[in-house]
Structure formats: C-alpha cells, structure tokens
Image (cartoon, rainbow, N blue to C red):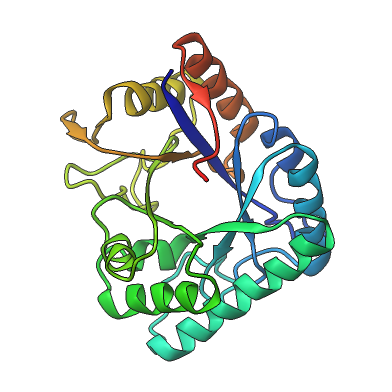
Length: 252
C-alpha cells in the first residue's frame, strides 16, 4: 500500500491571539510542525500543542524560523550564519524541553516561512541550519523543498533529507512556490487541494501555475494549519487519499 506523511504547521497562537484549530488538524495529519517561539507561539501554547499532538499520536517536529514575530517569520532576514545557527539550536532546544515535559520528543526539523524559502538557494543560511541541527542531534531529519540547498547540504552532512510538497500552494514550473504576493499562490478550495495532493501522492507530479506538469518526489505533504478553511482542506485530503488506497503515516 502507498503511504504518505501529512504535516501541518501548528502551535502558532500567541498569548490571547488564536491561530488555527490544531486539535482538529490532528485528526487528519501524521506530523506536526510546532512553532518554537521565534515566528509564533509562546511557551504555554507550545507545551499545550505538544500535549495534544502526543495524545493524538501525531509526531512532533521543530518548526524553526527567523526571529520575526511581527512578520510571522515570512520576511527574509539577512543575519550572519553564526547567529542563525545559534537561533536554530535555541529553538530546537526549547521545543525539546517542552515536548519532554509532556512525555514526547522532537523527531525532525522543518524551517518556516522566510527561512524555508531562503535556504532553497541561500547556501550560507542553508549550511547554518544544517550545522545547527547536526550539532543538536544528527539523527534529526530536515524537511525542505525538493532540489533545495538545505536538502543537498543535509545529505552531504550525513543527515536525512526529507523532500516536501505543499497541498495548498501553487507551484512555478521550476518547482519553487508561487510567491504569496501573487494572486492564486494559496489554494483554498478543498476539492482542488485534494486533487492536488492525490496527484502528488499517486503520480509524483504537480500541476504548475502555467498548466504544465512537474515531476516531484515528496515524502511529506504540508497542509497549512493557519489557512482559512484549513480543517476542511485537511479532511478532504485525508478522505481522498483513503479512497485512493493511500495510507497516511509519519515518515519517521
């Protein structure tokens, strides 16, 4: 039977502000990218998210990002590789402690937002992320865009590189994501998203913004938890995969 991991960005509420319905998402996904406090999340939110993920049998990953709460971590920050590496180490360590307090553990790392997009091509920052993960725990896989610098360097450093696709994002013909500043960059229709994912999981392909078909290999597919209608999209994806005989299972 074909299997695929579904992941979602969670733990992104902050103080009195609530973002997404994490518990509902846990009914559909197998892996949870938990915010580590730099782009979103606070200690109470993060610990609660770890507890709820563990109760749902969902694997926890560290969703590390730039130190940019105001920009939700979606802006590029031109910081030194050394500072970035220290920030990533700090974030993984914080999540490891909060997860341990709830009887669970961090099992992978996925960069967030602006950092995720930067290390597709930014070699120095990609190397900083890889160095940070290796320094903390070289058994932790790193998730990233297929063909990205971060995955290339992760493999070179002896780390497991996990290629990822996106359920609710439009693709350029070169395999990069359409910028969120462009119309149609984010998909919202549950049926369209389910079809998008089914093609990824069963054909290793994605329909790009210009209508062409791009072959991709993904071990995990992300359904963003903060998107409007995220729960409906995740539910539709889970249903479509099940109907096609594809099992949802964590990659670790």
